[in-house]
Length: 287
Image 1 (cartoon, rainbow, N blue to C red):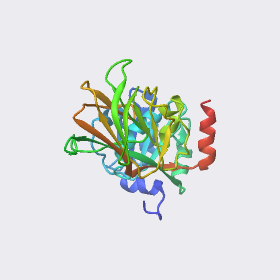
Image 2: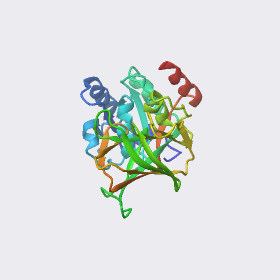
Image 3: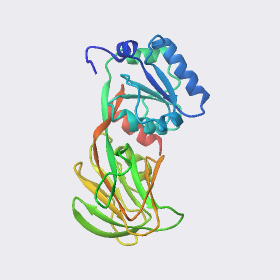
Image 4: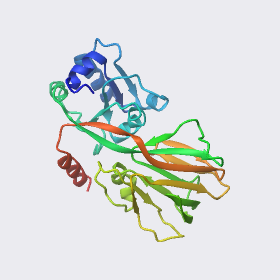
């Protein structure tokens, strides 16, 4: 970002992207109002729904993306915005809105005021997931990226996952459990929390490893270093599912290896509140 210009200046000159929660009329109405008031004349401005976003491989370049919805809307946006280093400003029209910054009740005048001052840029670590064949060649032609977590589990109800786990080159052995969960600090307040995992301050860069209902080990959740590499090798012939942030699913089998590391890219958020107050107030809000 050009630090001599506010985001209000930038979007007037370079456009704005808005992602809205699917099938929420109020979100689309608010998005249209924002564009009409802030940057209606710029050709690079766009609005898309989360379902449209899921079909895209890249975003039209803009200096800022506003999401209108909940955390799910942000997760879908982060997949692409992070790799293009486009910051996100989240407007909550969902539940708690852990990742959002503003409420949908905000007036257009107040939104304009926020964009006319210099915010704090908060960076959240991401996971990079690579599905490899036996020759360690990348499958699907690209890596996958997660802001919350990646889960590997059996493709069936109430069936154990059996796979080999390797951490930083150390062969931990064969794991039998309900699955394997690798999460970021951001993900520690999502699915990981329901599994009894630790809550990690969101701007840290450590990774979390959990083995839900493991039969082969009594391993507690592990906090891994930011440079750790996790390899998962399915053992059974039945297919497994790799789920990225709860909405991108890929089938994997025993002829493939899943490699998980911290990504080089991060998800950037515009923040106007004190970091600690914002995090802890949300943490207690969902109790």
